[in-house]
Length: 200
Image 1 (cartoon, rainbow, N blue to C red):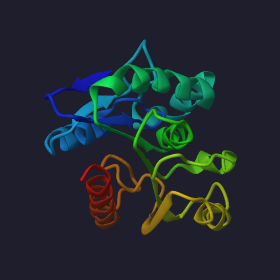
Image 2 (cartoon, helix red, strand yellow):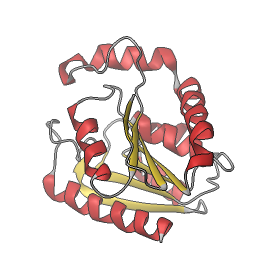
Image 3 (spheres, rainbow, N blue to C red):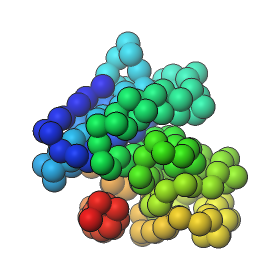
């Protein structure tokens, strides 16, 4: 876990990719801490802080041994503990973290908004009806599944805002081979506007 507390009345909970709290996630935490958020960087793993990019298969197997339901339950417990302290709580997830953020948006009272970067596994949870505004950000290409079918389904879901960029999965991670700085910058702007609207 990584907690940057500055006494703000709004909390951003960062949910990482399968790799855990790696350099990219810590930089995201610091980015929002510098924008007057208290920030909680959630770690999926107790025994190690993160996996390296080259350890993708080990990271995937380790996360899947936890599973989405248990991961969501763990984060929900954190949100319940923090809820009395904060006026606004937003969860922001990346890849598997985005799917967990999506699942949490279906709870009542835990958070006030949800942001998900390229949450491909959301396709398995399209039955979820978010109780709070949910911003979902995708590249235009997801080779592993039919992205257009998912987006058509999500577009009919209340409280969902969809944004798409000319990029691939992982486009906001400067340490990924799929990093796309223009798309990452555009996504940052869209997220900032979403957060401003939630907390004004």
